[in-house]
Image 1: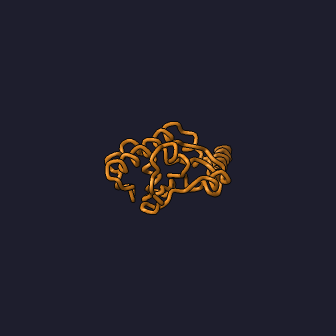
Image 2: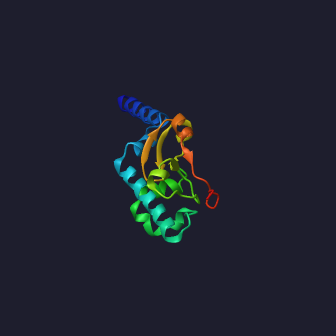
Image 3: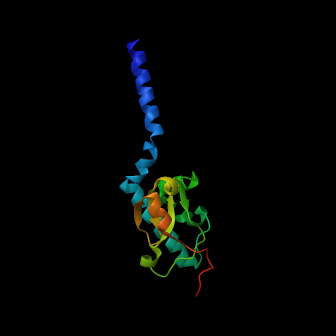
Length: 142
């Protein structure tokens, strides 16, 4: 009977952890994940520099996948949203005014955001709504 109570208590604790959203927060506090986000940003920019086009899908960055395996998994799983096919600005400082990617629940709950110049920020949902958005490629006024 004692083992059953312990098992039941442990099961309830694990279920409550899952409901509280502890799973998503792991990425948010992981320095390795933030490093991989910066590597993803560098691969995105490198693609633009070499092709003069913005990547339109994850496969466009396939040669660099080894630099950001966790981020790649999250993109493929729909947990990290990327702004594909956008018109980057000329400098990193200008690009950091715009969202390049974000964790899926950021618009509602805040969280981890990758800016276009490679900066990683933790923002509230309200701050996220105030961040700029890139224009689709070919739509920037010259």
